[in-house]
Image (cartoon, rainbow, N blue to C red):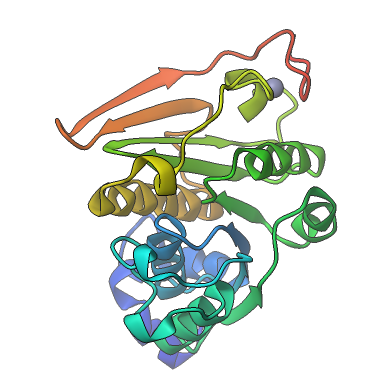
Length: 250
Ligand SMILES: [Zn+2]
């Protein structure tokens, strides 16, 4: 049952037929892990906290650097050198004291993920670390947790989600086999335009909320590519890869 305070706070989404009181109760009961609290994790975490996701787990081992502030909208200048996970938790609790927020100021190592991911209902991969992304893919598939993955570099963004409750689901390694990618650039070496992270991060939060509500999820097994220069958005259906080392898809 939602309290009077909750009914008031979430009234503008509860009035939507896609949400309703039943949907809001689902969001309040949900436990979500956000890995990476940078340019994508910032809008993702802010929207999920505001929407009333009951329990958020924030995972990031980094500290705030002045060069982050151009795009990582959770942080202010006076947060420099502080733990991103801890500052993010404070900011989200201030935005919505009705939810529980847990800070995990650590790297998302595979063994850590294996312990923690079974305790949540959904994972949002907002990291720009390829090794961690592959670890998230393996662990989520193993424990059958849905995941929404996104990344942005320069003016280009991509987004895809996987529903591992189905054995038929392809996985991230079908798309990008581990070890086959050449030295990948990231935001600190190649640069990134801030608002493109806002666009993709907002889409990532949207897909996460749809998964929790049980609504159709457009990005499931479908790679969405966004070009900020032209505003073009394309979607490519992902086929399972026979030789995938993670899911060995037939
Ligand atoms: Zn696969």
